[in-house]
Length: 285
Image: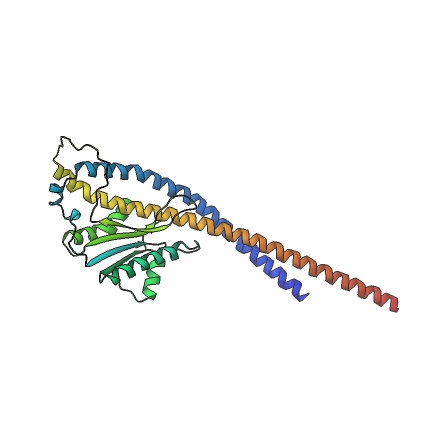
């Protein structure tokens, strides 16, 4: 019963695989809830920062702050790509890499130099394989990103932008919308573009002055934009891993049914053959 033993081995292997995928699905479901709560908690603060910035901002104040500087010509761009350290998440990492490569190709076609800054082992490994120069790489961002993580990633870029070494800073990450929708996207974080308030009144008495408020507000606004990208990337990764592991578990269940049915059919055929041989032998005697 060589075929039967082989099928039993396959059944055992698929059952073990299903245990692993089911466990990963449960872990991802738990982490996804915490990650989405983190995203939801970050949005009101981001909206308040944007609203305050739009009220304080004015063209005459903009001349005083390098983070609002808009270069006449874009020559050098820093791209911060946020991927995951792990796989088993469907097309999550590959979609982000595809988005980054498309933006890089678009900029380089215009003669712009692109400086790569990558978060996550998957993105780092891919661009190293391509032989791309990576200006900075980070694999120490956990599944619970913090404001300190965002500051570590972007503070140096802010300094270089203010000094005129960079003309723009972009972030490529997932844009978390729901558990089933987290498409990759690229947005500029520098120079800072104050959000529109739809013509809201700006006639305020400011204390301290608008310049002092902007001095503290602009770096916080940029760090918060990067923090939200980290939080949404983590939520997108957990959602993608949950979906991928659920699909893998369902596929393993379907495959087990096929193997068990095939095994039972083969076993029944062997029993029938053995009975026929016994009956035939008895009749010959």
